[in-house]
Length: 311
Image (cartoon, rainbow, N blue to C red; front, side, top):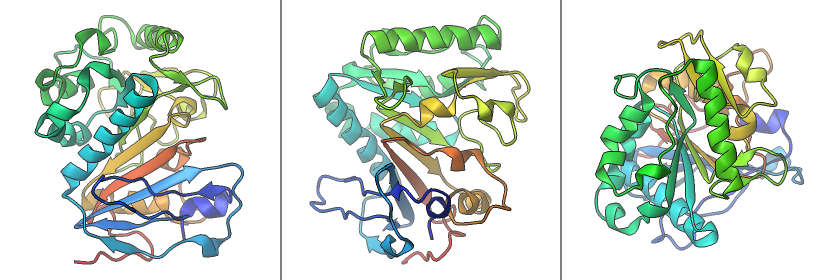
């Protein structure tokens, strides 16, 4: 059973059409979909849906492209839809191995078909280090994506790396507010938070997303869009991060997880594990009106309840 269902009976799930060559990708209340050796789970939270456990569908194997092509198709299609609807595409990135997976977007056909001039890049979290530092999420994105595609430099909103974490967070809030005023970033119609078209996240083995770590006080932040921390349990210690009000207001949130070392954490984040289990930050992502999509390889998905990969 889906872990969110017990605690949030208003959960609704809808399949996202990942590849245009698939005319009817499936629609349902819950979806485990095998993609060769990969798994996609798509949630949509709706306050007006009251669904019994029997609404959950069974595992459905489907033939799909390799994982990198799949995630690239997903991003490219969201970009196309957003540009068509709003004229821009606002995307917030995190760091880690997630960015390396985006390198596929630099290749054909994406490098020619994506409207890069309409992209506006933000960071869901950033380490307060120099942009040239190996720990910088900006540097990681620049090396793997931004330097290889024709994104307008002024559309890339990195943090000020010459000030303190607190000042960097304050300045980044201002940048986002200006982007909202200019309609580069939408506003949620159920909150006053910005509504990014896509927030793309990884997940740590401890269940952290962005720089929202287990048991940290910033998890309770309800008002600020961007928070700063100076005591990150994972180095470097100084960071800024989107808060849950911003993440949960996005039109789309994608969490990409690979590797057997994160399988138990994926299980705790997704499955019905009961109230006695630790509440992981990843489990607190509950998009208000948007879609939450997990991209998992077979190793990360290996401990999910009632799931077996079709080889």
